[in-house]
Image (cartoon, rainbow, N blue to C red; front, side):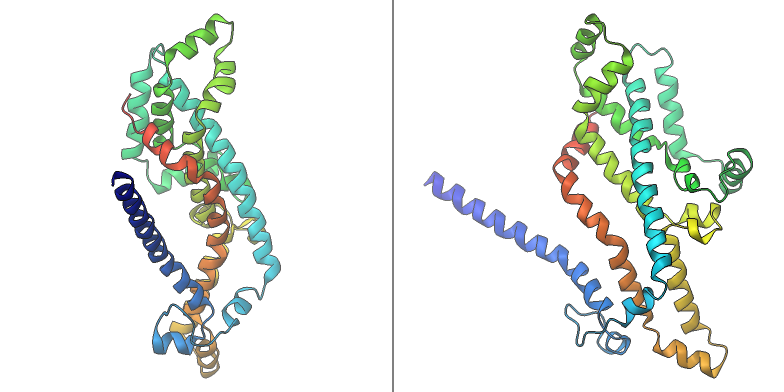
Length: 294
């Protein structure tokens, strides 16, 4: 009887999780349907799960300047990969240092890190520092450097390192290992769940960011994908909302504004969906262990 009850409960759990997963997929399917629907169908029927008729006009308009979009993809991929790597390296080193109890100013540095989460200097001082002192204007590294250190990532990794027994650190010290050797060969391999979690957050942040490109990059060849697509959507919205002549009205009436928005979503979200399954098994563990108070 007990085995039968467990089996029934397991089946019910699988069915419930499957139904919930399918329910979560509905918005994504509606976005795909919207990107493949003509504008007149969207205006008449709204966003539906399946398109009434299929049209690729949104993607054709989006990829009119395919070379520019491809270049923006290259910029964003480079920024995401390089930014995530150095983001993990810097935040992991800071988190490891703050996790060491023998650090004399550990409490002060931890409080200072928390303060940066609550207060900022403002947009104007930030821009002056980036342009006049760091000389980041119109450089690819301008899309990476401002997001390298993030207080929440540092504290999460600090808490994870604190959960590792001190005996491992002490035994490595007795064997003659230095702090950097301990960090690279012992702490980092043990911190894979937390690093995967932080890495996913950092990669999402770099991939979806358009703000740094808008503020610091004027050269179109160095602009990220998100900024380019945002510009395209803004131009389409402008054509539809502010026609200045009869010809402009005719052009704007044929532009599938809603379909282009959905197509932009598909173009930008694809790589992240492909990345998530590789780090999913570490995700929950990294969040839960890193959240333990140290």
